[in-house]
Length: 147
Image (spheres, one colour):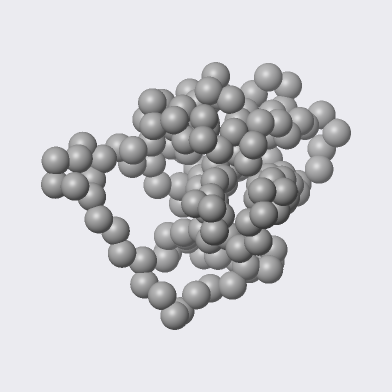
């Protein structure tokens, strides 16, 4: 990992830079729920396990990580294209998983878009396994603007 890089807690002030990164990152899907308010709320609940990678004063990598008391969940692990292949994504994932372990969470899940072969290869190289025994199902209230 580059010496000029810092990995630190994801702060509310990082949200605009994170959104800009996610909107340009291959394979990251930004939805209506990915607005500053809901992200700020998520960070309040999961401040100890969500991180950014910063080069100089720029956010070049992110991971949102939280848990429900039993299982952890990773969202929006992204690294700027120009900084990929330098161990930053691995470092962000490791930091998040270490934070979960400190909270007693030993198992973690994440979602990867079916067509995102690069992400599947990345996660497989880190020891994650494709699940074929479950199907993801979602529900959103019909009145929800985040459906």
